[in-house]
Length: 193
Image (cartoon, rainbow, N blue to C red; front, side, top):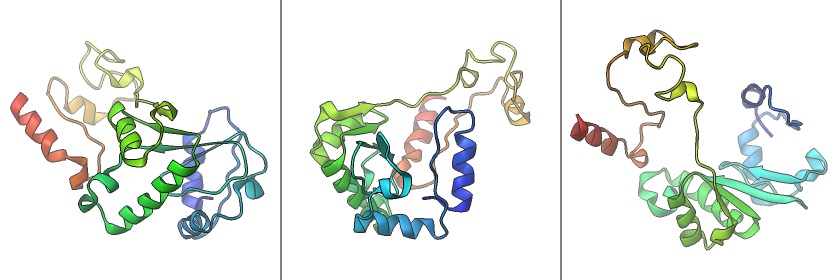
């Protein structure tokens, strides 16, 4: 279940992707998802009908009666460094991790390091962890559209890209919080400059 705003974002993100969407819109969706995860009833099939697989996010772990079960784990910071996150985040992710380790057929993560931590900290078999590295479209690489013509020359490039033409820069989309380790990124940049 998603909020009205969340459902709109999900539909926009999946526009053009050939999948059947079974999205329920509910007010107070976060509170309902949390309660649904913790109570463990009803199974997702009661809301969505039969499905082959359920892949759940960081923010909920809905019960299910059948089908493949998987989740994505980006990092285990709330377990490894709980002092870096809000206590509510530690509690929420701790419950999700415990449920995932006990109920998932597969877990996905974005690095070999995180795969190792899933095995070490959650006791989840490494052979059931799939590393799905993040990727970007070629337009965002040095060889992408506009390469050799200066930043901002490619389709969709805006004034911000043009302002960076010929300059070195760092781009991060991380939130500004200690667990993102941005101080190390800035220090590495200083050392390379």
